[in-house]
Length: 96
Image 1 (spheres, rainbow, N blue to C red):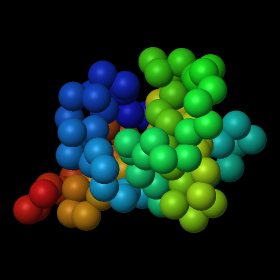
Image 2 (image 1 turned 120 degrees about the vertical axis):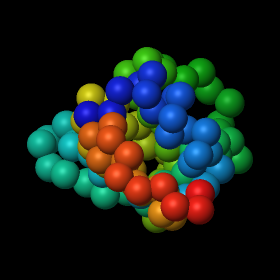
Image 3 (image 1 turned 90 degrees about the horizontal axis):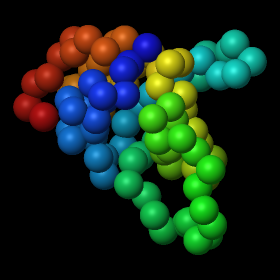
C-alpha cells in the first residue's frame, strides 16, 4: 500500500507527465501491472468526476487508451525510469 499523502508529497512530483508502471490489486483480487500516465486531460468528456481523490488515483492507461482508477489501498509498486517505489519505500532514485 502506498499512502495518498506520501504519494502526493514524494512520488507525484517526480512522475507527473511521465509514463510509469503501477502494480496494484484489482477488486477481484488479481494483480495488475499498468503502463500509465498522470495529467492526461485530452480525452475527458467534460462530465463530473465521481471519484474520491482521497481514495483513488486516476491515471491514463497507455495500452487501453482510457482512464483507470487505482485505489491507494491496493497500490503496491510504482516504477518510472530509475525511480522505484515498493509499498511506499523508495528503492532507487538515480538521475531522476
